[in-house]
Length: 157
Figure: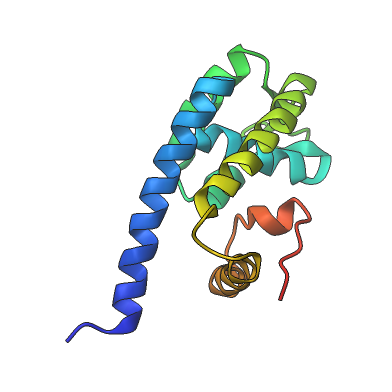
């Protein structure tokens, strides 16, 4: 017997895959950045002093620290992020958001907002979208990497 929870999770996974693919392709063609790169930049933007360790970024993005290294290396080469040593621990370095990265994230966020409108267009009312946002916020409350809270976005209840 299939439970509603199981069905809901399968629908969430399917929706996530479709949205991630659609947004990734859109951001890549417009900004030359993938969705995960944009999310990484958004996390840096919302962090204190616009910097995070690779381990913290990995936790927030739900990836491994080595994946963060693979993501940040090309971003560093094009000037979107920098590297800052920890004065107390030479083994620890921070990934920092540069001015170029800040500019890129402002533009990418505008594109994300336009793309988000397209996800729900002609399907749901504004009230239904607000309800979904509120329910998903409850589902993900307390998890590391809450990009919505990080960017000061309030969810209507």
